Length: 375
Ligand SMILES: Cc1ncc(COP(=O)(O)O)c(C=O)c1O
Image (cartoon, rainbow, N blue to C red; front, side, top):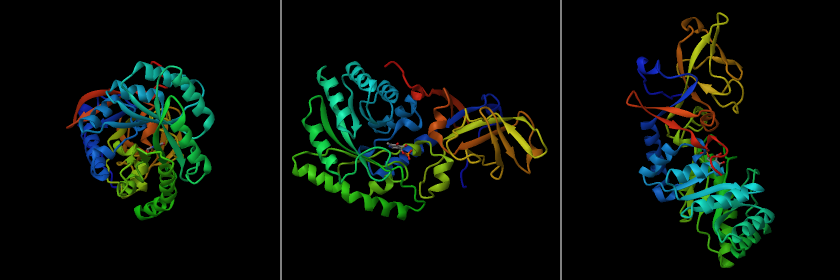
């Protein structure tokens, strides 16, 4: 893996607690600039904040003129609004008490332009009734299933057009467009991903045409994550917006799997050796409560200085490596690792140490790691 981690002088490293997370602010800025370059302009970007959950990162996006944002939780929307974001898509289907939470959110933040997603008439009716009774309105995007089969309705189903009509007619909701997330497109080569997107796209366009024939304008088609946003960025469809998340920090999972994604790892974990239990083992304080454990066991973090070490045990507070270089390490030694999956890793940390030009310049809170903030 060609990844490098920016240098941090020993006297700085020695002051940073382990396990914890470090963010390189200049790399975040570079990744944001590259997002804009790939998207073509800032208007087309609606980055997903679930990767970092930090108001400070929203500040960097806004500095670069990115004013549209995407979220997966109500707490993330609160974090966004507190950071000054006023145009947010909460790409999550609301059910149960979350409907009332969104009512409260809109009552609290009257300037917020919010859209949510929906794929079923029952919660849509409940949402409409709850908002209309308070004189409030929220945008609703039709959640389209283009093959991941996680949420959404097929674009060519009768229900898809019926839901668009229903959203247009119900009080308390306005039609905000389509949500087209394709997390199943994990082909390694860009040309294969491009072909896969091309095969799913005609049904989306056909639904847009049916909407138009029914007098329903589709103001936004929110597409893709990091692996496919470069593909949608090439399309000549003015309603398209793009929602990469991971690219802002990048990680070793995407870096290893998608060679075309030209981003740099901007967030790492710092860990220390706490034991050398056998001649070929090094035990680190980097358990699965400090680095995400959703990648397969043995592949949860990449250490550029120990690329061949085998991750043999991963417990809550321990990561045991087997390596021929074990004798080179002793308790207290520091290692920096690039998480395989950065998004759930961020959520494991209360705050991150921010490094710029080899110095600690700040500490950023991971505000929206909490499920509930005030609402
Ligand atoms: C709905 C939705 N949109 C966008 C993204 C961002 O994708 P990525 O992290 O691949 O950039 C995700 C990731 O989980 C997602 O679930």
